[in-house]
Image: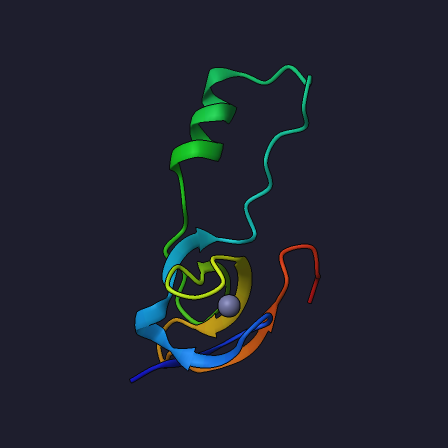
Length: 88
Ligand SMILES: [Zn+2]
């Protein structure tokens, strides 16, 4: 079983969490004109990276907070967890 350290609650079983996607994708600036293609890329296109990656996770059966997890997608080793506003 995979264990994840929620930055708010501590270490819990992975079954309490839901994967939330790539945490490196930046939303386009508000009120900035962008093309339909740029919006499509922001909404739909994601890389399927192998190795160390930064992801969003949701503690859905706990505190219900979102946070970031730096994880290796091949070994599932977790290196660090951060609150959403924190940077590596
Ligand atoms: Zn939590």
